[in-house]
Length: 388
Image 1 (tube, rainbow, N blue to C red):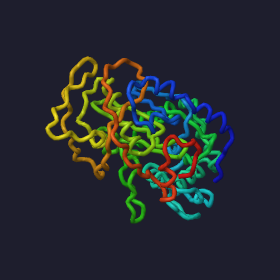
Image 2 (image 1 turned 180 degrees about the vertical axis):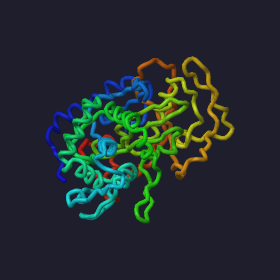
Image 3 (image 1 turned 90 degrees about the vertical axis):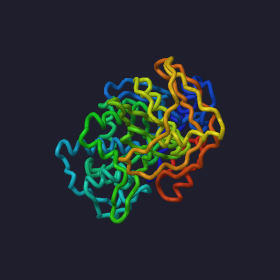
Image 4 (image 1 turned 120 degrees about the vertical axis):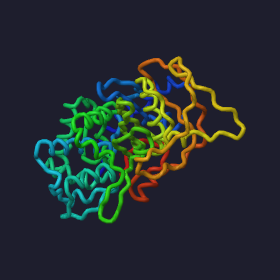
């Protein structure tokens, strides 16, 4: 599929410098440069019940949604199930056009197909572009018509800055969104479809003899995380929308512009930690994604002093313990301490974390080996979309 290039100049111009005035000006310390120093960065954290914004860093700046687009594809599919226009066991046929989509994909040949429930799992876990296009044709008759339906429905949900051009998130210069809009969509997926939201917590998806691992490694890595979706194209960097619940409080966060999935997840965890602290939730022992980010203490080094938060002195957290119910492999080694580059809506007395150690090696989030080479570009690269 060809990449649309209309409006490149105006869109790229709006990217440059927008976040620097919002996020960078508020930084009293040096943070992860690829994440913070990129015009692709933005972030938001909101409380799910009321939609109250807790953290905002360039949340209304235009961004490319990448595979976060599939959240809207799934919203439309859940509506069709709710309204009786399709069933979980209905067959989604793979057209020649849908089968031609580049990876990540299931690789179903034209004329083949899968059930609606299998399609849901393939979109959540595999982020399959061919399945997304087939779902669009299944519901809208054509993917182009389905994208128009997606845009109209998004506007009705309050996603005023979002425009869709396809069902998958494959590169298109006219397909744009914001961190606020994507977090809003994540919140509505939970509140509007509580009986379907559990799909986003799927850790493994069985397809034939293969066990496909969910790209969202926040599941199991971050205490309380139970969804939702990751995304990547060159023009957007590594993106994620995450929902997590602790002590009856649910937060939804979104961040754009990570230079790797490791950096993105680590940063998302730090944002959620701040959000829970602002909601009065006591800090937890660091989960693996955050504990692995902290450098190991040197031998004979004095114990760390309590950290001041909200004028209270807190004891250092206990060593992380893996919860019995987790079904995922241990997170890879992640080094360095991430700083949280955000403009907050309330004043919180915090101390800046130490400067990060050497940046972790990048890993490919999804797609083929050829696509993996493209994904290891730095976040300061020129924001031109490229296929997954």
